[in-house]
Amino acid sequence: MISRRNIRVKVMQTLYTLSSLEAGAQGNKVAASRILDDKLKQVLDLFTTTVLYSIRIAQYAEIDARQRASKYLTTADDLNADFRIATNGFIGGLMSNPSFTLKIKNDKLERFIDEALVKKTFQQLQKTQEYADYVALPRHDAPTDRAIIQFIWEKQLLENEDAVSHFADELPGWEDDSELIIMLMQNFFKTSSRTDFGKLLSAEKKEYAHDLLNAVIEKEAVCMERISPRLTNWDKERVAMIDMLLLRMGVCEFLWFPTIPTKVTINEYIDIAKQYSTPQSGQFVNGVLDNILKDLVKEDKIVKTDRPKH
Image 1 (cartoon, rainbow, N blue to C red):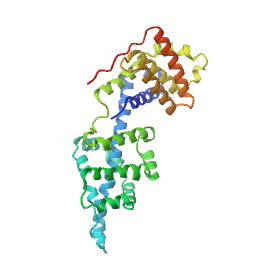
Image 2: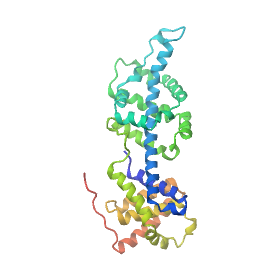
Image 3: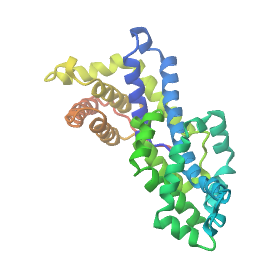
């Protein structure tokens, strides 16, 4: 579900958090591991909550139909309100996924659902042509049921200023992880039946995340021996903290992660620097890592192997 690039970002964020702690805690691998796990769990919580929001809006159709039918003065439309979207096959499959229902229950994710936002968004959904076309169908198949829930997420929530503002204010991690959540949601609508809401990472990727984190902490001195000589034209104290962390991560991947090609390492950290640091950071990280790599190649320090196939 989550890529190595996403893992690198979480490791970088963990190291940045550690840098703000007292000196004794900065090298504490136990504390670092706990922070990383918390950040990864927060992504899973956020992803599950956005899925939950999407289906709660669809399920509001049943509440709406019940309220309309109980009015003192009802119309034929009130009495025959179509609420099949609330129980469509896509939602049924999701609600029968134990990992989804357990995740919601165990982490109390319902507390993040704002009923006023759900109601308002459903009312906006009712006005769309997509909803009118959906309820007009005599029967719904699996692709149609999935498409209407995806429409709710992409058009009624993600393009809704009120919804996005609410997410930013009320959902922990949204501002940091919104792009990652959007990617996870895109994948979810392609592979929903295989989604395990109990874990975000495969065992192999979780091992990579913690191995990278521990390497950057343990090998700081070794990494800085490689980085410092390449900062001769830079004021080391003025180099952005994130840039320095990314350089250390890059050197660790060069030296101690034999299945990751050096070109992949450089390209990934250039992209992360561009997104999370200063406008000049991509070029800076590229130049420093490229020069360090040339030194390591000359010294015959680079040993890379193919990643084992599972």
